[in-house]
Picture (cartoon, rainbow over the protein chains, first blue to last red):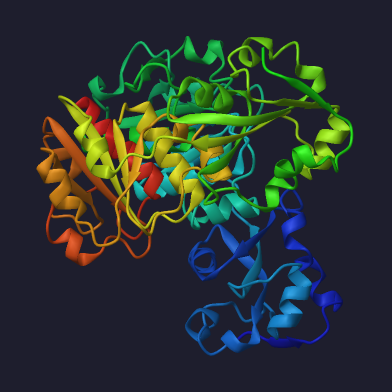
Length: 266
Length: 266
């Protein structure tokens, strides 16, 4: 059983890392991130790629959370606080009553991650997805359709931002991901690992619904608005989603869902 | 040319309706709503279902907005203010520089709306969609795939909430919608107008990808979590989306995109 520490002063330095969680993010500092809620925490505890550094929970929920708390490693402190103290630390009413600080301990290279995938696989390659809602939505869809890996270019935001994790319903801790270094050629890398890449674009040469998936598929998705860089688009098969005329393109997270459903069902 | 009124005092009563727009919503008051940004405003001006009551714009954008402003009816005041005054009225930095208050002037009954649709048509029936992001996302997808009408049950939020309009990229002003009164039977209504209804549900009897669309399709979507009421589900064909095991269901807006893509391409 891990150590339970009762916190009764919001200024207690042992919970300083949890202060005003809405206003800031831990990402970028030694691979740290903030996990909220039971669903997300359970995914973190189940994964070998992450480990919790500490938990902060509402004291009144200790009993209800016992099954989850039993999975917390012994050397990880669990801070428990009455709801008013919890709210004062977090800086807003923390209805969910569970926060944890986690660390990413496995950060494979894109090459190593692709090398670990055997047999039929679908992966995503994301370019310049800078919006946390979209990033979270894409990870959620990726998990729902069994995507094996997500590659992120240097202009993507971090999937471990608090909001991205929340929108992903924890999928950001479930679907393995890796960064493409600036200057690295993701298309050559994917080809080397046997992936056929298609790019989604409103100006795509053929219709998604006519595309016959291969055994190993990589789907390239770019930010709404600017879209994909022409030099990337020119090097892959591009497909479009049939849409009514006169309306903006789909949201990129929705687009990912439509494409992954097509790959899963064709 | 409509009247241009220069506002130099944030406390000016003529712009009181624009005060602190983030903190409140106009919906529910005589069909009023707040529209933000050029794309949304253009959709409002192009629609016979809505009319602007007034506009509030950044003075520095008057010239750039001239083509849009020329479409504003003569009796609609256009308030123009310097950026600091605009920000003080709105209560936050209003980078987009355009707000408008609109009124919905056509509110057809669900029966009249369905009665106006001829030939092949897809419509949506939404049950208990209470989240503005989801409502906006569903309208955006509906517009992208040419949905002709959206029916909302009594437990749905209003598509004209500010955030729903924004997330819909203006589609809330483009796709006609109507309320189903509490106690009214939407399935009987849809059947009477020749629509075949399918319900999306994680426990659906068959796969969406196997479903052959009819000439007139109605798609029933419910809130995530609680899902659709069993008494509704029992009365229609239900379909599910193939998903990887062990993960939560898809977001309802993403689900709408996947279904509408299937209907459009099968």
